[in-house]
Length: 144
Image (cartoon, rainbow, N blue to C red; front, side):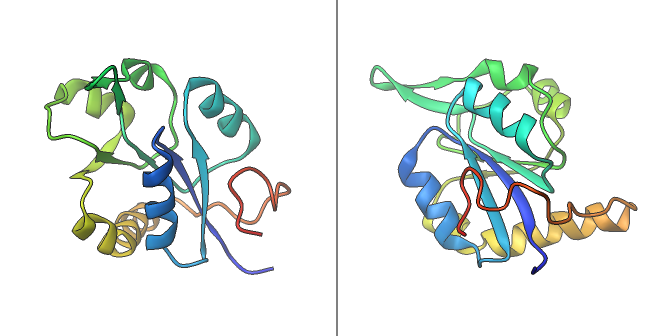
């Protein structure tokens, strides 16, 4: 068994999910959640080293903030990878543990591995360990 780094990607955009997976090497096990029910299922299935989320969804021709995300208990640390530059209340970002914020772009995906490594390195420096291999290998979102 090889060591994996477990990332929960909360994003309802299928294209973004593919871009995200393609930006990271296979050591990152990316599990996706597209909506609230999906998120709750994924959280019950596994522990995660990192959560990346996009709180915006394109609905009826405009970006809408998915405010329900700010009332969920998300794995820490959290990276906000947003579809739009529209502002989000800092108190909400603090509430869910956002440590870094980015707007989706080709450059953001290109730098994604370094971003994840940096934030996970800080997590380890604070004495938190990474999630070890668990029993749901080949589970939702798995590459195996």
